[in-house]
Amino acid sequence: MLWALPATIIGLLLGLGTACSGGRVRRVGRTLEFRGGLGAWVLRNAPIVGGASAITLGHVILGRTQDDLDRCRSHENVHVRQYERWGPLFLPAYLLCSLVLFLGRRNYYFDNPFEVQARTDQQDERIEK
Image (cartoon, rainbow, N blue to C red; front, top):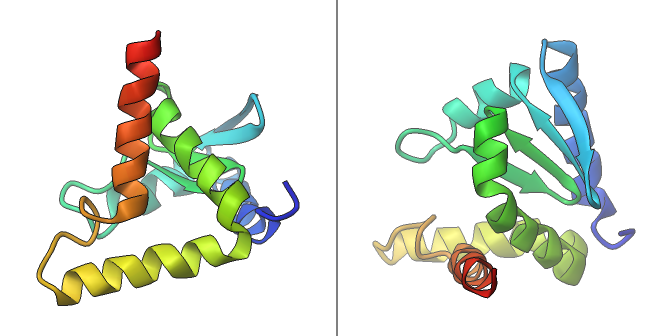
């Protein structure tokens, strides 16, 4: 958990803003999930067509709504494990991958290997259930 702490601190700051702006928080497993408020605004305005439903920062998951958190939880938990593996290198590595993809005229989000892994692991988890 310490290895992911730098990103978790960023997530906690956004989570605090979310809670102070009418959002809600709850603990789910090893993560804190925030929804509504500032976090929902940030996600609606994310640079992805239609915005994002959820985002993970270390051991913090921000979602627009409870339904979004419930629907995205397994995908976002893959990102939690990625943060645990990559630690403070995760955000720079993720952003670098997105930049290289963008410059190569590929989709900076959907083709990002971290997102590909999250979608693949999420599907594998559904099959196992």
